[in-house]
Amino acid sequence: MPASCAGNDGMVDLTTTATSYVWSNGATTEDLSNVGAGTYTVTITDGNGCSASVSGTVAAPAGAPVITGTPTTIACAGGTSDLDVTITAENAPYTFEWSNGSTTEDLTGLTAGIYTITVTDNSNCIVTQNFTVTSPTALMASAVGTAPTCTGATLNANGSVALTVTGGTTPYTFAWSNAATTEDLTGLTGGTYAVTVTDNKGCSTTTSVTITDPTCEQPTGSIGDFVWNDTNGDGVQDPGETGIPGITVTLYDSNGDVIATTTTDQNGNYVFDNLPAGDYTVVVGSGPDGTNPSTPTSVDVTLTPGQDITTVDFGFTPIPTGSIGDFVERHQR
Image 1 (cartoon, rainbow, N blue to C red):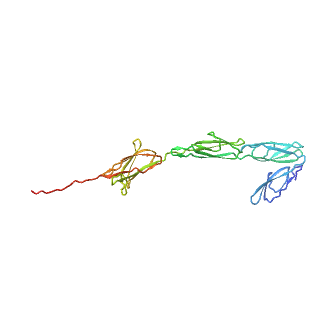
Image 2 (image 1 turned 45 degrees about the vertical axis):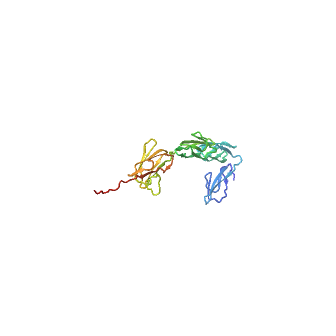
Image 3 (image 1 turned 180 degrees about the vertical axis):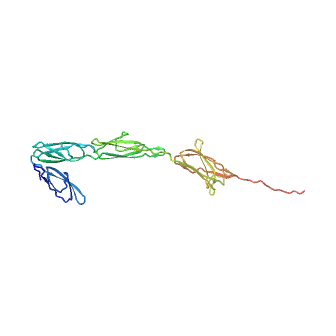
């Protein structure tokens, strides 16, 4: 029902099965009465908690003030808007009353929300109008880094950064500290990578991520095998020829310096492990008493990254023994 210029006597009749009502003018009844001309929005909620909004307009009478205006756009979240209102009517002067308490015709510094103006002209004709100020959601960015990998002792330039951007107004532009302009980064080694994201309205945000290089090392290897009783002295491990425990074995580097010394276990086995790639010499010590080496006592070995060499064997064979003797004869005179 339209309002008269006698005052706030318009009505809005709402038909609904909802059980809760909240109007833009603060009323909580199903219907509105004694309101001035203008648009009124109600949020209704039913018994199941479902909500919806609808608006109704109380028409202004002939000669009533006409309110027009458009809020300026808030470009970035957290910004403000200005609202320039124009009043067209026949009975000036007017008075203004806003829902935020202001009594000026225009508003400045507005955050997002609904602002209602009530205009009263010199004939006590009252008109209201709602204005909605909107704001984009906050522009936010987050980055996740993936460290590069190693190939042996070589660091690969294959790290990456995945950037996630939300809010603001698309499309976005990207300015990285390494001069890249893509959203995500690839082909990276360790370092800190910072980005400034700018949206279509000129709003910006920054974030950064630090990538740490792994420690790249050559895989290590081992050298070892067996010291055995070479019973037949042929320099070949034959079935039934057993290992010799307690034999000293020494490992030298390419400069002739001792790297490690070990002794064979109860089965005649030995091993030097956790060795980087390089050139080595393996030297076996003395064998058991009464034996001679049946194989070379020094072996040069070239170890490649991660290689396990288990063929450096040493044999000892018994020293052959002989006898002296003959016959003692008795002579009679």
